[in-house]
Image (cartoon, rainbow, N blue to C red):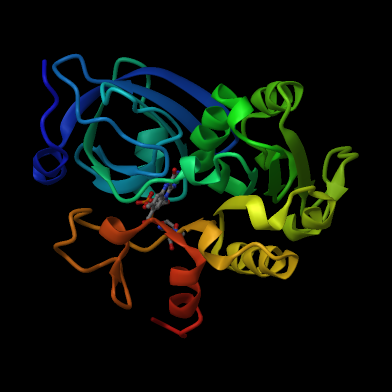
Length: 280
Ligand SMILES: Cc1cc2nc3c(=O)[nH]c(=O)nc-3n(C[C@H](O)[C@H](O)[C@H](O)COP(=O)(O)OP(=O)(O)OC[C@H]3O[C@@H](n4cnc5c(N)ncnc54)[C@H](O)[C@@H]3O)c2cc1C
């Protein structure tokens, strides 16, 4: 069956997707694999997001953390923070979740062709970046050094631990730090920016991908700028409260941007002037 156009599925009622697998990643985070047997949505690109409905409760934006190529299989990693995410993360295999999408802008990995890639994630921010890591690995020879720097509150908050080992074995420079060294943690302690000096890359030929709390992205971007990475080659994923996802309601307005349409992925040259205005 031919996939409908993105504009059509964005504004339609949610498409029912079946939960085919549910993996518990941490004490508050779950990865769901969703499948639409009736006919696919358009393809989702890394960096884009879906509006996921927990029927009878509500709808929230959640980024793609895997799948998406043909729109019939979507993978989402969801942290339970409130009513909707609690219901979504509690949905067992066989259950149904509503999906609208794809929405927003994508990470532009081809921009990094021939150069180095620096990926910096804070907490759940690793979820939207997972497809970037996997794409870089799939075409490893297209890039120079690929560094993945991860910050988590504690070791118990670390996502995708088994995959991190696989990625390191496959030639990605993986470095992890935690804010609080609970439970016998023997690794780095401190904020994720403390990992930047140890990352090797050629600033003039680097594209950086950042996702995490705004303050983390700000300090990371400043660190990268100080090393000489141009602002436009530092990509960040913005988060704002969203309702429609289709640039109608204005909930996610950030200055001249509607983050659901013009984001979430934007260059730091675009984000910085907007994020530095208080209460914009
Ligand atoms: C483009 C985009 C992509 C996202 N991708 C993911 C993802 O891949 N995985 C994931 O787990 N979450 C993601 N989020 C965040 C997710 O949408 C929120 O956690 C969700 O909307 C919370 O809804 P709720 O009803 O469960 O909780 P609510 O009752 O709405 O909120 C519970 C608590 O979480 C806080 N909160 C709510 N929304 C946000 C937010 N957007 N940012 C920070 N704090 C918030 C509230 O202030 C409140 O303290 C994304 C958000 C955006 C805008």
